[in-house]
Length: 446
Image (cartoon, rainbow, N blue to C red; front, side, top):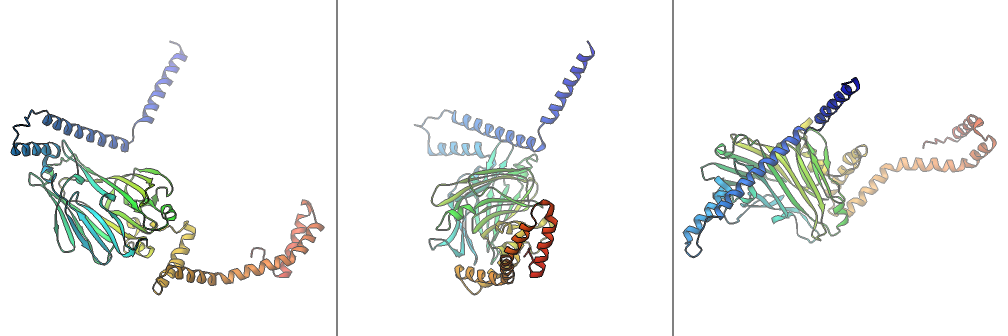
């Protein structure tokens, strides 16, 4: 074997090794594949159990109501396991309200069913309804040893506790899981806490996360659709970092592989946002424009949260349901600093960072002040325009005055340019021009 052959073989081995190293999956990809395999295995196990039950020969002529119920229960157990007692029920509604919002909850899925803002009116002269029914749907995916449980398929037991509602799941083996919603007075923030008891009997220690899934059809609140649609988008904030959003025009999708603090569905004037007490681990987001007259866009968000079956507290969230008011949204950061800030005020588009301070320090405070005396936004905008014109008048007047002097000097400047043409006389031409400006008291930068 000659020297060139050996060198060629060595290079081939090096190339193969480098290619294998370059193409190996990232930790995020490995985790995503593991999650996918777990889901497939659980679904397959559930399918096989249901198939085995379906193959059991039963004569329809001799089956009594008791036997039919037994078969039905067996089917529920095959599909839901320890969650089977919570797999059937009738939908019930519970309402919480304060002076800001009226909220309706459904025991099916233990979710927020409807959100109405008491102080705002839509174009049809009714109170603004952010969503109702299936327009807003969210839940958690729980993985047991052999099953994938979606909380949206389960029926919780509701119980009112003052200005809070408890949604509880009582499992077959005595384990419990629940969601507590509490609504403070004079607030657009709904507190959501997920708790559990003895769930390590059902969920293995290897299940270290839950999937979070959230869908919403964004309602149209204004008579005119175009501007509202252009200013509606899916927003999300990276933990300790900046706020990003999907495209406001057309369909869009993004994938976030780092932790997130909150996820929000933003309308031009109102928003709904899930704010984690801890963090979301990642995110997959899609936005799709809708042609339906009643709706603007379809938003979809997927993420995961950390989970430990032995901990009594699973997770906590604040759900913002309110107007895109800069003073309101910025107030949520009053007691926070550094990486803890929420930056919910980024839901309000105020231009590039260089110009944003003008809006936050001047325009918005003046607008808010005028709003205390006038309820008509048209009057407020007119007065705000006059105020801005008055503030800018000294600068505008000076600019007009400078322009007028420049027009008077234009013939003399032309005479200088004609008398000293060419690049070789540029310095002399510039000197005479600046002398002329100085004598006339004109600042060309004005």
